[in-house]
Image 1 (spheres, rainbow, N blue to C red):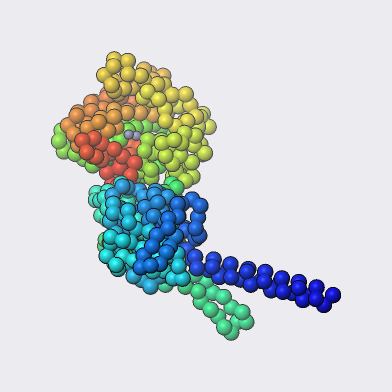
Image 2: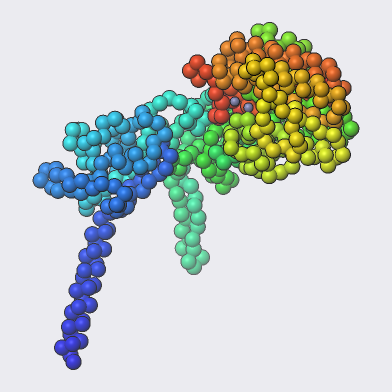
Length: 481
Ligand SMILES: [Zn+2]
Ligand SMILES: [Zn+2]
């Protein structure tokens, strides 16, 4: 009997020994994160079956290694042209060219994850890797977080490039714990930040926009903060954190595309009629240029438009929805080109509620469900533009005497995409729309609100929009009788 007990005791000891030694082996792993300018952060914590583990040998030591290239591909870099920063826990960093990774492996040993290279200099073998940071080498503000003003793209940065700047460390008070009221412990988290007022000065007010359509005014400056493959905006002393920003607009205009809803509602309530002239893809810089160069004689004869901003993302569906709902994307639900159905009432639905007659003259299709049936205008004469047809339909619609009518001219956006924002063919299109606006305005005895969903900027020989830059974000806004 005592022999049996001794045997099971021994078995238990062996199992315990095996268990702890297994654990010991697992302890070696720790984790390394692949981050920076990537679509997906990836954390490597073990000999994951997602990768091929190669037998490699260096200085007579055998390792199981994964190609750095395989790890990098797993995280989807935002461009093909990148560098890699290998960062050790001891603060040591090595920068490699993203095209020369064929001889670089990541292995695990008693120091944690380490890089082993064969053709690179010996100091690119970093021990105790904490992170592998992808750094986009292409100077492309459309792939960056941008600090802009009404007329300038001031500063651009990506999460990867953040680490190569002279960022600051902010000791962020993360919490307080106390066991017995006597021994309070303050918990800090070190955050990598750049103060906004080191990027630009004379900041009175800012407008922060986030990738998910969030839209926030602040009367205080703060910091942009690195957070893995994202950048946040923080005001630590006020405990304000906006995650994953697309940019900050410094000293934003007082007027926005969303004012369309409230101004239209205001006049309807006063029993004044309202016509909204929606010129698609018409940036404030194009409006100014057209006036200065004789492409907008009618607009030049009116009061000058206010400088206004649209929302992120500056594309038709999102800009249109903000215009007719008065709410930013995060609230109205339309953040991008694929959203159609607003979650909040549109100005058309509001007009019906006020017992008003509402009409909508559209181009070839309607990007957003407005709550009323649009009058569509197809390119009947085959000139590749619908503005002439929209103009004809608008004149017919005006005869029905609506209280609210929105007329959507799409040609300036179409031409802008083909030729760029300042091209004279785009300007000629603005001039044509200017003449249509003149005529429909003369047939209207109510208020007129003229604005745009977004602007346009040049890319190569063409034009595009949809990015946090002043050319796309800043638009004209004009009310006249
Ligand atoms: Zn548009
Ligand atoms: Zn467009």
